[in-house]
Length: 308
Ligand code: AMP
Ligand code: MG
Image (cartoon, rainbow, N blue to C red; front, side, top):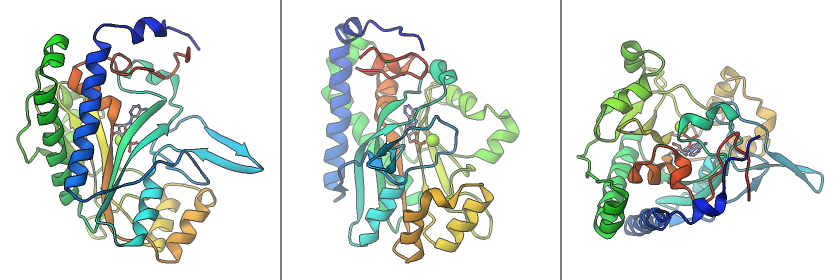
């Protein structure tokens, strides 16, 4: 652990106020858009018996309270699915704090924090394509709002915002890997000038697979200019037997998900599609910062220690 911050200097940097105004504009535009689309806002949960298993390895962040093991939220995906079991909400969203104790090696990726917030969204009965269309509209709405309301701030920071054309390009991950190798996301992100989608990624049990083609019905939104991944999402699996079968294939221990699986077995889960975008990563993209720490007021960077 190394402590590299002088946090008070970081907080008092002249451009920090401009960055925070842009962040406020992102959230204001998000809430306005969600209201127009009749989405229901939920409050976050931070403690639960279950959380996202994630598709990559992180350090354990569970705690014991009153004899019960509780996970700190890595993402609210399972709670999103469970809340949609009401069946009468068109869609939901949450500004959701996530704790992910990422490996210290991620320190220089420029886009990893161990604590961040994502705007997590889930739509009833939607296909992946419908969710992507919803998200493209949201991105254009946010970027247009920031461009209009934060003119002076963007000018001082030296960043120009271009409103992307819709629909965004869609690339298949399998094909990209064939052409560019394992580092395809980084390479294509550096080449592209506008946000785009990558589909069909091998991930957690809750992403749906097409029963015939076996393609993963999921997607990542990738920012251009090398800023990389900004959102992950999918059509969700809601059928108990398939969830169990996918857990087996992924060597995911069903014991860790018992309360969720009980709800799934009783048939409460319904077809949904959704995704979540990281607030700090979006602000980093909009302000054009090399490292996410520069776009975050209290940056929790893997392997850097936390001053306060
Ligand atoms: P995931 O579903 O795991 O891809 O997380 C959803 C979104 O949250 C990602 O697309 C990022 O925008 C953001 N995110 C994920 N992990 C981190 C992290 N360690 N630091 C900052 N943002 C993150
Ligand atoms: Mg992701």
